[in-house]
Structures are given as structure tokens and as C-alpha cells.
Length: 116
Image 1 (cartoon, rainbow, N blue to C red):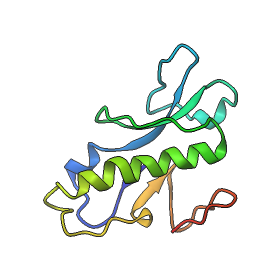
Image 2: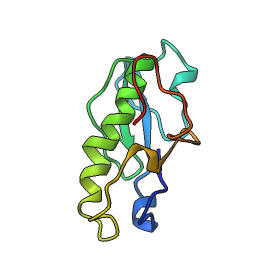
Image 3: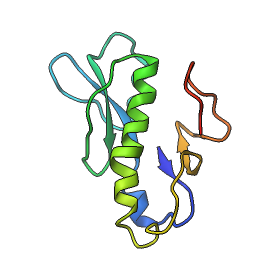
């Protein structure tokens, strides 16, 4: 998940989010792994950021994938945005991100989860 909204700069570039897969041995996948391509391979989907931040795991399901994306946004990026000079007064919204290469405004929502 990559911020492309108002105030995007080098500081926001350092906080590209992704969904990491937790393997049965506890290790996590990296930013270039599409965890959706390996169903059943993970015990959880973990919100992660290239800065090293990780959040609480979600179930390794399509709904869990969406939840992990949202957790990265709400638990990490929105908190961080309040501290970055260029974003302190910007109302960061889901539409201001590329999600798996597709702006949120045009990507379909997971079943039962509206994209706001």
C-alpha cells in the first residue's frame, strides 16, 4: 500500500505497507510476496511496513487480508501521518493509496466490506 495523496514525499515513501504471511515456523514473508497466491501456506496475515513496523495478525483468509491492510492504515500510517510535517493537517483516506497497484477509488471491495 503506497501513499499517493496530498503531501506525499520521500518520508511517506519510506512507509510502504504490505500484507506479510506468517509461516508455521513464525517467520514472516517480505514485501514482494503476494500472500494471496499461496492459500493455506500461512497461519496468519500480518500488516507490515517497509520501515520494520508490524501489527497484529489476522486470519489467513480474503477477509483477513483486507483486515491486515486496514490495520496497517489505521494502526501505523494514520498515526505516523499526524507526526509528518507534510501530512499533519491532511485528512488521510483510503482513496489516497495504491492498493496492490490499483487506486482504492477503483478497486473492488472484498465481499461485505465497502471501500470508503
